[in-house]
Length: 359
Image (cartoon, rainbow, N blue to C red; front, side):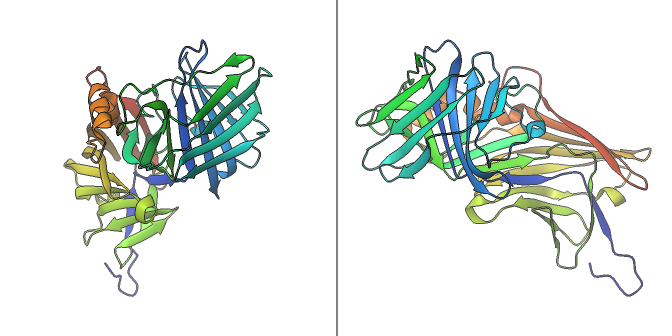
């Protein structure tokens, strides 16, 4: 794909993006019998995108999610889409703010004052031997009614807090939080439904954008742009998109290659796509593009459920009973239109497909 002297470099018009959001640690504690909340989720960051420090999500029974974060942590509300929407959204002083994962389990202690002037505190200290995590795709997108993007949280080494020998304490104001129990023993041990993971891999497919990417095609067959690698074949079509490296890599591959919208034929193009995180197959589906009257319509349909592997027996049974752990990705579909011309523009939205078959 090298150009000769005097020849205009070939260009690629691409309506798709893939990204990775870094996170150091994650814990989700489900509570039972509380009149206001269903779960508390502390997160830890240390990167150029999110800053350094902790963020805590509180999942409310009305479907909304409260978001609190330490000074030094960056939160963009315009892209923060969870549950039925955002409730409280505020920076707060966290003291203490400790979150570690050791060979004996999780060691967490976090406290802050919320918008209702109540002290929120969660303390978990696990002392267990022979801890071994397992891979799981979090069902974070299952409850989002109006998604802005396909948001995938893959946890390569998730584990649950063992009940024996562990300290679990929590409160909001004068109200004591009671942890929920996991219904099935995990590797012979009773556990709380408190799951935690070091270095989750968070993949994002097609976040909101009003413009497709216009790129010069390289001789080497790969373009690096905005934290993303774009692979192209000899025809100038896209073979794959990726973000991150090694076990933090998120990759989307196309079969056949996704067409260059600048030289899209009049007939429709169809194919398949697949998404892998940390080299593990997660989901996939079909794509379709069609050109007419100076515009190109694109559909990216998610049709493949997540097929887990490497789960302990109890978790394999649990994800079969709680089907949405496996099937929720296949409820998503993206549709967009690219307007060709001097400066191409794009409109596109993710939607949840009708029906309840995926739950």
